Length: 194
Image (cartoon, rainbow, N blue to C red; front, side, top):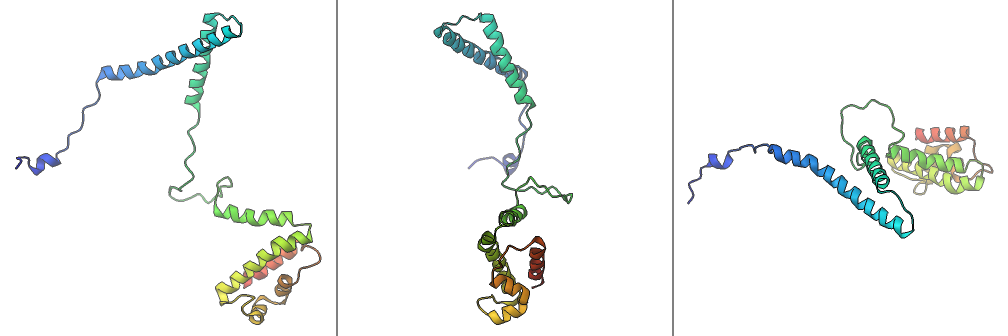
């Protein structure tokens, strides 16, 4: 058996801070690395330029490479931080109530899911009949199913009574021309009343 007590096992001691010489070496390391990269780039450029028959002064080449590396380093330091990952949303307290149009969310996707087809089908009856009318029918069926437990196909008589004659005829018989925005607004208002 060991003579170690529970207090010895649960004791916590902080580690000492790193010594000074190690810190000094860490400052010199990036400088030495940058100089090594510069020397390698200069050597490659010098060999490449000589291979194609160009003569460039060595101090000019070294100064140019160091300038490019310095600009690269400065721009890396001044670059804004990367955006947070879009995977999760962090709770940061109350929101200010303004809508962020650049963010990707379900509301924007739903709006675009209606806005684009409505715009695309605004002047074409066939497009409206093929794309928009079935969606409006699905919305009507979903509202009927949620609120009354039926669909247009399961109980047409009761569905017609609940939808009203105007909405029922709009969904059942395609019009000769695409409806105006005012007509679509009236139909949506009727759908919301269900």
